Length: 137
Ligand SMILES: [Zn+2]
Image 1 (cartoon, rainbow, N blue to C red):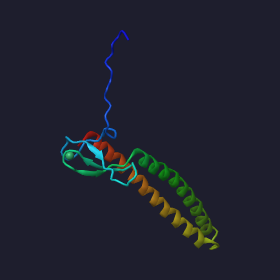
Image 2 (spheres, helix red, strand yellow):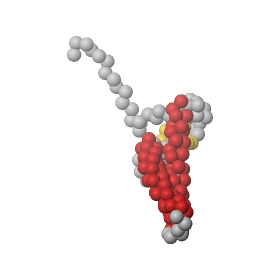
Image 3 (cartoon, rainbow, N blue to C red):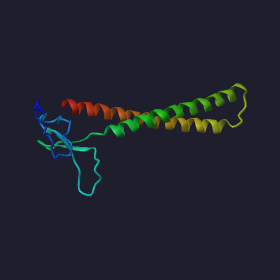
Image 4 (cartoon, rainbow, N blue to C red):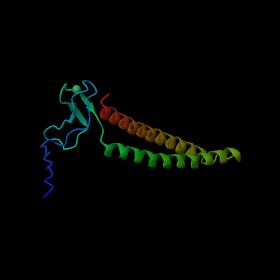
């Protein structure tokens, strides 16, 4: 009690002050746009100065995208290699046994891999967008 430290009374009623700076006017803050009847969470933000709107994905969304892309990607690569080796073995021993099945499964694995690659790409886009708005450039 002797120290008499100033009490920090920085308690705002605001829904957490935004850390994102507007990239358009570079002065305003990007505030989450929560409409009535919608859940608390939103990734849509609006500048409190110039009304510039932007979608800034949350870290939860980005990390779940990255995790699912990496896990799914590893599984797809594994399946792709499995079926590829079976196809190659068929060619090697000149047996057409089940070759069309393995080629089909190989193509499906490749398509999944593309999908997970796209998810990974989306995750990185989200990260760079968050960085951009954090710096306000
Ligand atoms: Zn602005």
